[in-house]
Image (tube, rainbow, N blue to C red):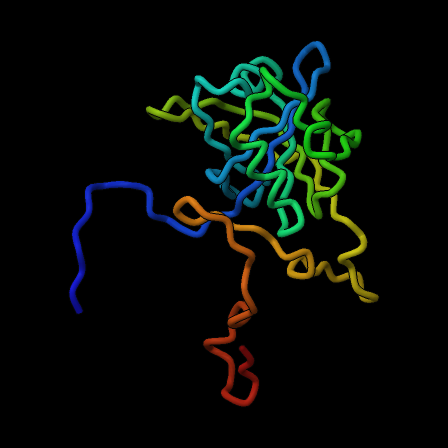
Length: 192
């Protein structure tokens, strides 16, 4: 099997694409689209986002130390792209794409009402890493849209058709290929 060798780069794809919402000290809202977000720790629950210092959102994040990660869906694809290419210096993104700001419980940043999952975050540390600075953050609260809950109170994010980003394009998550631990279950119990 032949492989090409490329220069070092970030080829860890696909990635969840999220809209990060925030409010500056004056209460003005902004949204930035980020694909460089991830889980860092379970206990305490921590996440990270990476932002270029020249982005308008960067100074708001540094100033307030709070934000909300809003998961994106197929239905939100246009808003995701728009919020990633337009600057909050120029436009109110909530109004421009018709998103609903909702009051968060633990942070002053707004949640996006149309998102199936909203993760309230408080910045613990900012790590300059080169082109991007990583905002290491503790999760303060999580909100889930009850329309994706079944009668047993199990959450079905797949029903929202989550959006992922891969090498310059957005994709909707595909069908299930297995479940955690299915590879070690007895053959009669395997599904996927």
